[in-house]
Length: 357
Image (cartoon, rainbow, N blue to C red):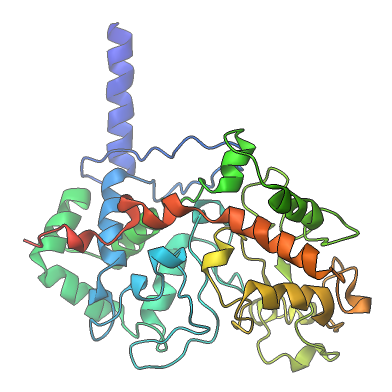
C-alpha cells in the first residue's frame, strides 16, 4: 500500500515538473478506436488548465493588432472551425488571405500544418496567423504588453506557470493545447464503425464507390476503411489546373517550402471530416458546393506537369461517375458530419460564461 502511495506522489511531481511550476491536471483524451496513435508533444504536455487558458485566447481578439479579430473569427465552431462560406478569409485590414481557411479538427495527429506543411508543430502554427499582415497583423511585443496588463490573463498564466510575466512561448503553448483537444469522433460514420448505427443503402453505396478503384478511386488520398482521419496527410496535385511547366503555378504550394520543382502545385490533402460544413473547397476555395467538387473529379481533372500519379483516370478528365453515383458519394460524405463536435460546450466561446476579473 505504501509503495502505491509513493508511485502516485512520484507521478504527481513528474507532471508538475514537466508542465512548469504550477499545479496542473493531465488532460485525458476520449476513448478512441480506429484512430492512429496520437502524436504527443514532449515539450508541451497537454493539461486541463493549459487547454482551458488556450480556449480563452483562441476566442479573444486581444491577440490581433487592433483587438478586433480572434482566431475564432476565421475558425467558427458551427462550421467545424472553418471560415465557411468564405473562399478567402479577411484579416483586420480587410486584406484577403491567400488560401482557403482549413478546418480545425484532430490536429493532435497531424505531422505538419497549413496547405504547404511549412511548420511541423502546433506551437509554431499558432504564431503564423498572429503575425501575418493579412490576418491578425500583430507582433509579440504588442501581444505580451496587452496580456501582461490584463489582470485576468496575468493571474491565469501565473497560476499555470508561476512566473512574473507572460511570454510568447506560454501563449503559443496554451493555444496549441486547446487545439489538440479539438477531436471530432462522433459522426454517423464513426458510430457505424462502432456498430451503433447502420448506413442507409444510398450512404453505403457512396462508401463503396469511394473505395472502388474502378469507380470513385478516392481511397488513395482519403482512406475511409477504418482509418478515421480520412486523409493520408500527404501532399498532392489533384489536377486542378492544366499546367505543363512546373514553374508556372501561381501558388506553388508545397514547392514554395521545399524548393523542389516536382512539389510545385502540391497541397496537403485535407480531411473529409465535416466536409459538408466547410464549403467552399480546395486550397483556393474555387468550388462552392460538394456537387461542384464531384463534377470536377468526374469530368474536370486536368493532366499537368506535377499531377499525382494516383490520379489514374486523369487521362479521361476524371472518374466518369453517373449522376446517381455522385449523389451517393455526397450522401456518404454527409455521414462524416459530427454534430456533437460543432456543438460541444468545451470548444465554444468561454467569454459568454466568464467574468474577466
